[in-house]
Length: 404
Image (tube, rainbow, N blue to C red; front, side, top):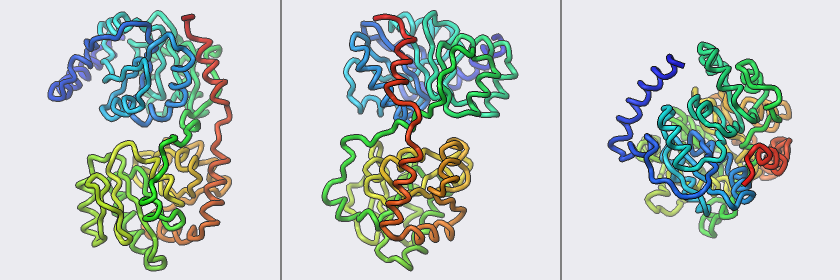
């Protein structure tokens, strides 16, 4: 524990230095004014984890109307995302540091009744210093992370044995969590929270967008990272030689890169229309979707989707969301973050793997026909349905929470 405290102290120093200009020091030290009432504390690393868990969060919120939720996140975008949900009895704030005195204060001030943490966010002081149940949902434990935990084997075993309920994201994560000390009786079924994704009710493009982007002529490059946009743009130019009516919506993973990506589009000598600037879609232009919280709109418009982060060393982003919209899926070979669902898609030939601009352009051509796009999307949608019913998971979690 001493080694962890030393490491965490260094991390805290850096984190507080970054928080100072953002005015978040109080939040990081758990000094935000607490809302009165009993709270369920839910924590996710970023907007991706929280968005995936939204169906579970909303179900828990509805099941315990006498409790409030305090939802914390390591990123500003995650906090903003939760606030945009406008859930009653819910407060979203930056996550407090995992310092012993900070976590103890947070538990006390917010009258925390139980703590639910998502995916890889296993913080020792939050687990060990809380007298109530700590639940891990969608637990993700990669080989390298497990190796690091193993270097502090005593601490790892204490932390893992304290977890009241664990639902791992995949079989490999479950094996690592078991090896680190999670109790057999605490282990639930393997569930990827992202498989519960359902299109939001407001994900309905207006008439102007539908007219500008016919589904069978539109493809989306979703959540792209540096190095991928150039490949996407080169593929677009190649594919348009055979299909001049092809439309591209380009949505970078981080909208703050909008200026950078706009520059790449101009360098590629392709017309540009920018969502953040209020530009109207133009038939020959790339539509740069550099805004937050609108990805569902772009999935609804696109018959084909290239999943970003798969042509870099990022491990790839979710296939569940495009599958939920019935989109035909294209992706690169780096899919470590979602190895299991991509393997399911691969075995059924329900997604197309690409490696560069040429193969991406070829794949777009192969999926030129609306019928082929629909067939691919329907197959992905069917294959990636969750194996465990959402209600079953929520009822299991509720069984581990204290009575109201």
